[in-house]
Length: 461
Image (cartoon, rainbow, N blue to C red; front, side):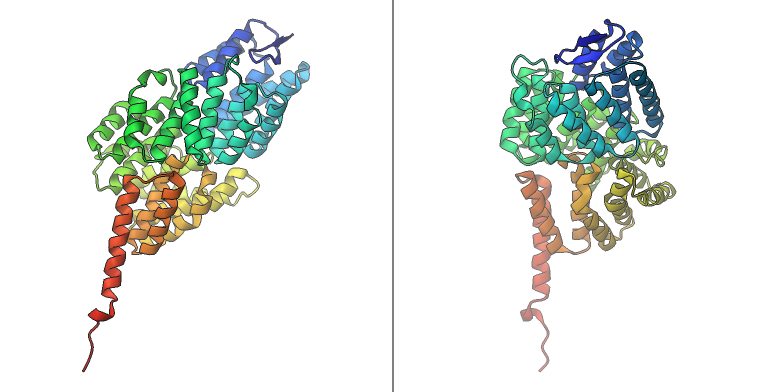
C-alpha cells in the first residue's frame, strides 16, 4: 500500500502500523537519540519488507565504521533489493536503496551525490537531508554539506516537524565552513525551537571553542545538560566538548573528571568514543600532564580494530591509542595494513588512506619514536588533505597540534609559526594552545637570531 509519511511523501508499506514506528525512527535519528535502533526494529518487525527502512538499516550500519557491520549492511541491501523487485516502490525509496549499494561498492561520495540529487526533488524530507549530512561529515566535505542544506532550507518553515534539527545541521555546516557568526545565531535558534537538538547544541559549542569564547562555551553546555541526556554515544562527544573547553582554561582536574565519569566511563568500543578519549589524552600529554594507565583500555580495544579498513579517521585514532600504550607490534601492523589498503585506488577509502591516512600514521609513529624532523615532514605532507579523513576541525586539531609540536621539537620555528598563524585564522580566534606555542616559537627564533648575531662572533686579530 502507499501512504504518506510525516514529511508528506509517499512510502510503500505492507502494514500500515509500521508508519508510526518509521516516523519515530526518523525523528530519533535526527535527535541522535539512543532510541533510534528500537524504533527501527519495531518498524521492521511490523513490516520486514519495507525497502526504505531496510536501506536505512544498511546505511546506519555503514555509518558506524565497523567491519562486522558491513555484513549486516549487505544483508539489509539484499532484503531491500528483493523487496523492490517484488513490489513497485517509489523513486525516492529506490534511490535510497541504490545509495546503500553505492557505498557498499566502495563509493560513499557517489552515495551522497545520489541522495543530494534526490533531496532537491523531495526538499522537505529531513531524513534524506540528515543522511547526506552524516555521510559528507564522514567524508570531510563541509562545503558540500553546507550547499546541500542551502538548496532546500527554505522548505523548512515553522510548521515542519524537523525544522529545529535541520537548522541545527545548517549551523554545524556554517561553522565548519568558517561562517561563525551565523552558525552561532542559527544554532541557538535551532536549540530554542527543538530542545532535544543535540547536534545544534554541539554546533554552537564548536563555534565558541573555535572563536576562543571558552567561558561562554562552558556556560552554554553547563546550562543545558538535559539537551543531550536522550542521546546515543553522541552524548559522550558533547561531554568531550565540555572537557575540551576546560582544557583550554587549564582546568585539568575537571578534564579528568569528565573523562572518567562522563565520556569514557563506559569503555565502549565505538570508534567515535575511542577518538574522543585518545585525542584528549594526546592533548593532555602535549601539555606535560601524566594520564596514568588510561591508554591501556583504549589500546586493547584498538588492537581488535586493526583490520577494519572502514574509516580512516578511526584508523588514525586507533594508531594514537596503540602508540600511547607503547604497543609497537600492533602499531606496526596497523601501519602496514593501511599502506596495503591504500594501494586499492578503486576504493574511495583506499585513496584517502594512501594520500592522507598513511602519511599521518607514519608521522604519528615517528613522533612517538622521537624522530621529530621526520614526524614533521610526514604530518606536513598529509596536512593539506587531512580534511578528507572526515570529522570536524575540532576533532582533527589533535593532528594539527602534533604537527606544530613536531616542528617545534625539530627546531623548525618558522614552519611552526606559519602553521600556528594558519590554525588561528581557520579557528576565527586564538586559544591557549596557539598562544603558548607561538610564544615558544618566538623565543626559539629570538634565541637563534641571537646566536647568529655578528656581535657575538669571535674575531681574530
